[in-house]
Amino acid sequence: MKKKVLIFSSLLAAAMVAVVSFNSCTKDFEEINKDPYGISNDQLAVDYKLVGEPFKGVLQNIYSYTPAWITQLQQNLIADVYSGYMMPPTPFRGNSNNMNYDLVDGWNTWPWNVAYSNVMSPLLEAERNAGTEFPEFIAWSKICKVEAMHRISDIYGPIIYTKFGRLTADGGVEYDCQEVAYDAFFKDLDDAVATLTPLAQDPNSRKSFTNFDLVYGGDYSKWVRFANSLRLRLAIRISKVDPARAKTEGEKATSHPLGVIISNDDNFLVTSDAGITHPLNVMDNAWNDIRMGAPMESILKGYNDPRLAKYFNPSEVVPGQIKGIRQGIAIAAKSDYQGFSSLVDLGKIQLMTAAEVFFLRAEGAARNWNMGGTAQEMYEMGVKISFAQYGLDATTYLADATSTPIPYVDPVNSANNIANTSTATIKWDDAASFESKLEKIITQKWISMYPDGQEAWSEVRRTGYPKLFPVVINNSGGKIDTDKFIKRINFPTGEFQTNATEVAKAVQCLGGPDNGGTALWWDID
Image 1 (cartoon, rainbow, N blue to C red):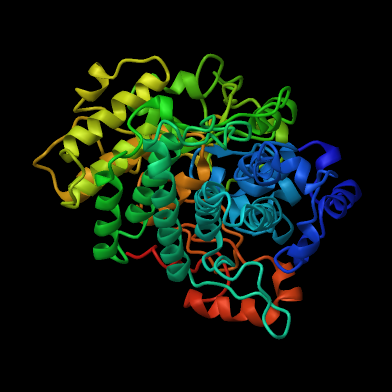
Image 2 (cartoon, rainbow, N blue to C red):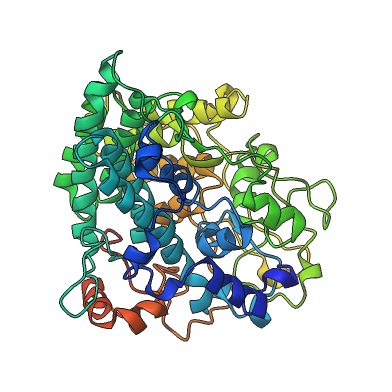
């Protein structure tokens, strides 16, 4: 990380103050929500700006576009690493940091900060301005909230959701236990889909979103399909902890008249403002702070997967070869691992693809849900459409019944070498056990969802697949089991300072201590 963005530098401290006073961001919503545009409501209402303009910022902060140092703390030094996708060559804080489970409170507050200040607060104001006159914007807000806040819940567990914008008698804000939050997610999707479906089906409906929609250009049908796909994602997420509810919600998603995402044309990709570089490219190219993760090397090289060259560049440490860095290793100096494989330049922010949705349907079918096809059909479509996303053909790949992940070899330090942890192959075997099928499905889904480490980390925790490499160094002081991997991130320290009564109740929801070793509600064996 460059000196100007060092976590504990005075410049970063000044930036934290300048952006917003985040320690109380879930309580100071009234102040945050003042009109930022400096013109009257009457002027803004002419072309929906009063309710629509905030959505641009919201969509660019579910995963922050800029500045890159916020994204680095929001996701990269958490989920992008824990998913197995990436690993820094940089020994932050004397090589005692998130990568080896010495969780850094000053880093890990940022997913929370961004979500409440840059998503929930502006959406609350947009909903107030929409009132009863613009129900389509309230529906859109609900979809955006679910997309953003399920990611936050999947980091911390309990979150402030249904009570956001309302203070308790003693000035706090109540949390929802994760089970309650997920129930609210499904209900919000119900409401949103019910509102937008008739608009999508009516060619004469007003096109209110067009000037503000950085994903689908105001297309109601695509937003409904995304909402249905998001419902399916959340249904699969709770399939172990609440299988009956999961089946109901999953089948509701795929049986809807407008269906789910089935084409790469409907992928959820967020457009940036002109001139803004993808933050991962800034971290990678400008700062040399992120590189390929060792599991990506093991799995993609083992499978002879042609997507490997679409994701990563050849390394300098072993010229011409792709080399990833294992998580949680001893790094003495950045120069030791900086020459490992960098990331191929990225374009739009990717938060859901058709491939992911087909893999969700494959798992649903394997669980005997009605997904509109067999598990094999959905699995193979997932692989094909992921390949098509990169201009590739999957025919030979899908017929491969022998290739498996390979051992990992560290050319800098052989102490980090490790045998391959999986024998899963690619070709579908309908006679295999459910767990064997699940490992295939999740491994291929994991490959296809790159580079969204947040969703990948959630699936690794939920299923145990793909089988990642444990950290070499565990600096958690016994709080996180090396073999069980990290389960969550601690609640922000600011919440204990400004919302102490309610965050204490939230800890009780966890059923364990507020640390990285306590599993979330849906994360059961």
